[in-house]
Image (cartoon, rainbow, N blue to C red; front, side):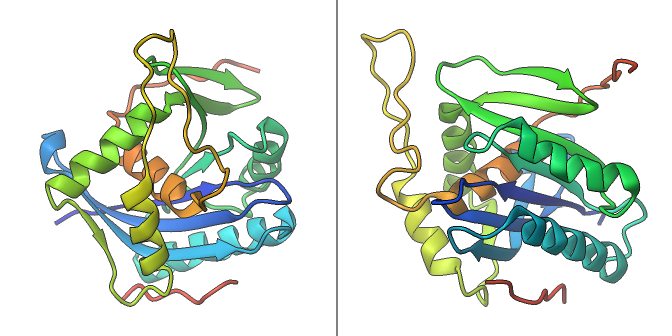
Amino acid sequence: MRKDYIISISLGQAHERTALALLEVEPSDDVSEIVCSVRHLTRYAPGSGFPDIIADTIKVAEEAKEQLSLTDGAALILEATSVGKPVVDLFKREESTGSLQVSDFEAMLVSAGDTESREYEQGVVYWRVPKRNLASVVQVLLQTSRLKIAPALPEKPALVSELSNFKVKINLAAPVDVLDPWREGAQDDLVFCVAAGCWRALKPRPQIQMPACSVSYYDFG
């Protein structure tokens, strides 16, 4: 059976945590049958430098491509809501030079409301995705037993805890949702990281015409 792989990263500011996940995806023409398995998780301490995180991302991509015999490498999606586009540009620079070898490069900015959209800037596809959509994807996968987490992952208990608390507060009297929580109080870096990857796995791939112009080692067994 063919399997796809997604490297998903939720990027935090200096006082926040950044998290990286490698997801194994069992694709299907029927979105209700797609299965996402978390094969690797890294949670970085607050203050970790982006150059170090990028270097680790390059290593994860290389290990995945080699050990999993991926012709084009894993796809990459960056959840960059906290840090913005300048940090995405740092990753894109490595991808453009060939240092970061991935099959697809996209970024995500989480929003309120209920409308998804995409835009292009300097060769990067940016998705604007409502938080409620991420929560819905996670909820559906959990309720249908299609989100699996490798039992040996040290961060599994933290991820399970974050998944149980992941929610979006819907205020029916307001024109937009209230993002609750948004990196305040509870740690939510792991759940945003995994949710972004799962959303990407379940999102139909449009034919996009681009405009001219503490780190653990990886067990892929």
